[in-house]
Length: 352
Ligand SMILES: *[C@@H]1O[C@H](CO)[C@@H](O)[C@H](O)[C@H]1NC(C)=O
Ligand SMILES: *[C@@H]1O[C@H](CO)[C@@H](O)[C@H](O)[C@H]1NC(C)=O
Ligand SMILES: CC(=O)N[C@H]1CO[C@H](CO)[C@@H](O)[C@@H]1O
Image (cartoon, rainbow, N blue to C red; front, side, top):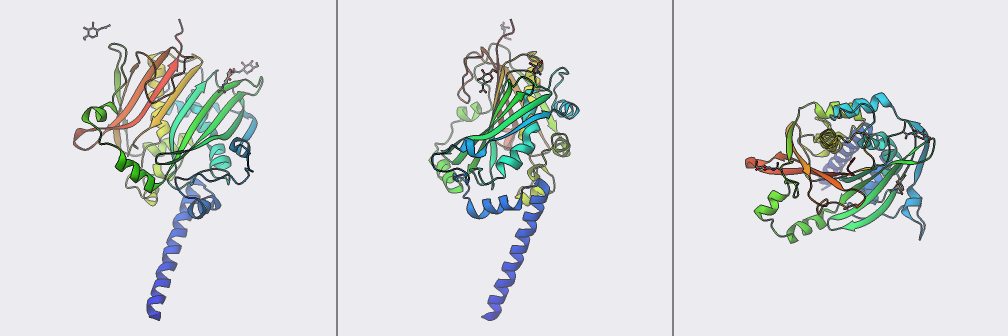
């Protein structure tokens, strides 16, 4: 009996030390503070909304989470290296999509890893992204970041983080990006899957097809993602989340690393900007939602074309813009099926 207890104690101790080692490695790699990880593990439930600590009754989450910075300088050579890696050919301006990598460190260290972030970090994903660009990215900029909305959804909970960039000289807004993070409650997700009717063949096909487009203007291209691609991207973007790393992804329970979602978004946007000559066209709005991850190495296929009317069912139809170019990205699944990776739309007004 006591021998059995002793064995259990030894097993528990070794499991704890393995867990601590794994946590230590994860925190070192992605510099998540240990406190944030413990908070998520023991005091937060995935898929539920946690009340921000600094948020008294009636106070807005925006006020509890807002951070602002003044007079930062864009690292032009770094941003151009990133843009080129993603296929931007333009040379006169910095891509609007760049606002995300630029503010990523602030976003994680000062918003996501703090007490006030309303979701558990375990399994949280970046699911949606809306960028509105009003002007050229200023070289000297001020910024403001805050969690602006929290809501329960069918599979768990979501929150929006808004990131705004201002021209440091005249204070005018240059750009606003809203990213949506989703945290999944495994039980709720299972129930939702069960209750969802089986998709018909046509509905499955629609997931990787463009919405009705203007006549004969669909284009496609293939993007080959080689084995070391995510490591190279991590270097130029500064995003070294272990889920993108060939070895460390295994610690996160994944067999293969997955490619950065922002990379796929930037590749699609770069192609649309080039094809429709959008460099220097403002305002421009980019909306995107990620579907299934892209394991590496893999080929991904993009299709894009100008939509006939509005932006379709997935996105907000903003009347400010008269033209909408949709892009979808998919990869091949088992038996030659197409699996959706991302869908996005670039909205702008005709130059003429
Ligand atoms: C920022 O504001 C100043 C002053 O109004 C202006 O001269 C400059 O062109 C602006 N920068 C950008 C990139 O719009
Ligand atoms: C679109 O393609 C079809 C078949 O290739 C052709 O008959 C038609 O004239 C084209 N329409 C336009 C507007 O180019
Ligand atoms: C959403 C948002 O921030 N909109 C502002 C962006 O900038 C324009 C012009 O500078 C303002 O009119 C919007 O209110």
